[in-house]
Structure formats: structure tokens, C-alpha cells
Image (cartoon, rainbow, N blue to C red; front, side):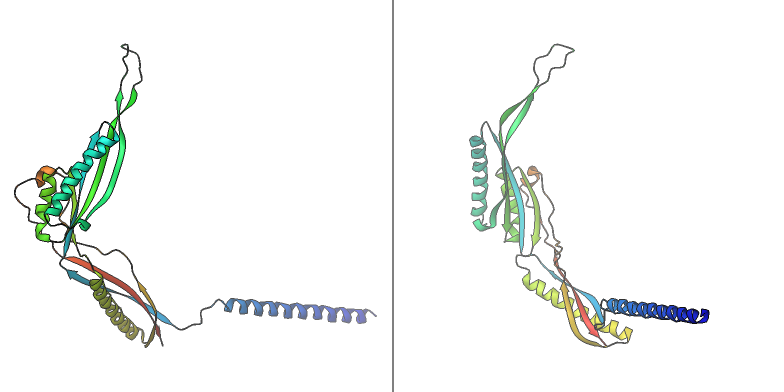
Length: 260
């Protein structure tokens, strides 16, 4: 009887162990299949970057000037500012600058304040009082210069007409789309050449392009004439020589190729 129960218990335990083993193997197989869903099994690719750069002489210049005016009230301050601005703009137009190339870039009107100290007995603290003391107007105008030979004389002109400061003279390209197209073509050719060299080094063959990315960063520009903040310097009778230099238009692209 003891052997009977012993053998029956052994068979039961063996069955349980085998069942657990089958369950564990099944769970492992399911987990492995789930993980395989996240493994990349697509084609092998390589990515390369290329750069193209085109130099060109600027065809326009631009600078800004400001006018500041004060008045007892807002109307007087605005009138004084408008008189100065209108006079300068009229002089620019008379010198050949198109009205469409003269643009207001900044305008502000705000009250001014002064601090008055109240009469006070010596040795005592007497707080002062902030009192409004009229209004101040600031207006900044951006001027586009299409005749670069005029740039120096126009700077002197606005100084003579009462501009409070003149700044930001720079030379640039009015429409650089054609230059950008040329730089982009150079960048693509550069990337393709690099991809071929890389594929040869890796011992693989390029099949087709499957990705393209272009850096939309701002192009660096050169040829700045420098800031000229002092009115007296520009009021000189000698017209300054302002070399334009060359501007650089840059394109950067990244190409992705499928390889075998």
C-alpha cells in the first residue's frame, strides 16, 4: 500500500514539474516574440552631410537712424519728432532713395519724470516726490540703400538733418534665392561624393536615397560697415570710404542612402 501511494505521489509531482516547465517555456517564447516586434529589421542605411558655399558682392546696403524729441505734453513731443523725421525722410527721397525703402522700425512715446526733494530740517529724512516732466518720443527708421556709392553721403545727410544716432550700416544681398539654389546644389554634390567614399570604405554599395534634410539656419553675412553712433563723425565734409566686401551664402544638407 505504501509503494502504491508513493508511486502515485511521484507521478503527480512529475506531472506538476513538467507542467510548470511547459508553462515557463511558453512564457519565455511569448516574451521573446514580443521583444522581437521592437527590433529593427529594415534595410541598412548610412547618412552623410554636405555643405555648399557661394560668395557674392552685396548689391544693397542698409542702416538705421533715430530721432528723439521732448515736449511738455504728448502732442508737442510727437509734433517735434514728426518735424525732424519728415525733414530727414524728404532729404533722403530728394537724394534718390525710394519711399518704399524707408521704413519705421521702432516708435515709442512715454512720459518723463523728475524727482523733487521736499524741504527738510537738517538731520531729518524727508522723502521726495516723483513728478511728471513732459513726454519723450523715440523713433527709429531703417533705410535701404540701392546705390552703394551713395551710402557714405546718405549717412552724412541724416546726421546733418538732426538724427540723434546712426547705426548698423551693413551690406547684403537683396534677393539671395538664386545664390541659395547654387549653394544647395553644391551641398548635395558634396554629400553624394562623401557617401560614395564612405560606402567604398565600408565595402557596401549605394542603392537609393531614402532621406533628405536641409539645415534652415540663418546665413552668415559679411561686409558690415560697422556701427556709427556719433553724429559729429558723420557730419564731416569728407565722405567715408565704405568697402562692401563679399557675403557668404551657405547651405547644409544631410542625405540618407540605403546600402547593400
